[in-house]
Image 1 (cartoon, rainbow, N blue to C red):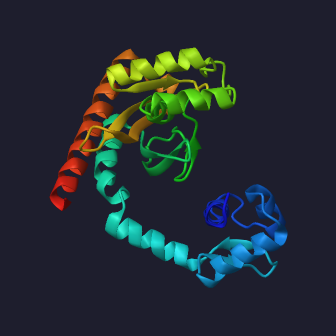
Image 2 (cartoon, rainbow, N blue to C red):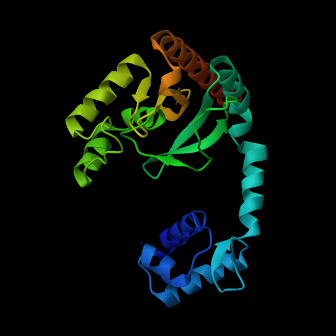
Image 3 (spheres, one colour):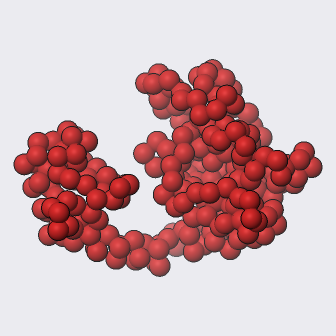
Length: 252
């Protein structure tokens, strides 16, 4: 990695738990010397993108908040998808979420929580693999196939439960099925007692760049509910895709 890439990596690491990091650990993760890491962090501190604590460790700085607030207010997607997800949550009684593909993982961007006493837990920024879970599989299914095949060659697929797909060939077949039917179902793949239904969000050219999903305890979803949830998720994804495409055309 060059210096610019290392600086970007530092910012991402500062935004990860435990959210307070030492120079040595950060240097190891970006494969940089302690003095080199300190110089990069100093530049970030001067720009307000990082801050130093009393214990001489580093956290994200106030400028990150301002940038995030500007993005959310002026560009952010959460504001646009929120009413759709809230409606999906109310129609199903389950969590509804919006995720994007970032650094090879499905990252939760916005979530509308179920109001039921028993519900799935999760938080914005949470990452999901591309071979397990509804949104992960949706985003994985619509990646370039050569990129997918290279990824599958790099390391084995992790088994989260006995239902997780760990065979590369089986995953490629699952991806093919998802592209064909336009949605993904995950039952007990990440956590044995949970299930999810996900569908792709497309841009005006038809390319998939995000996904929405609902997540629920498996015990609460019978076959009839599952079929209804598939319809609701697909229709909501279609509506979001349509609105975003219209907005894009208006600004072009």
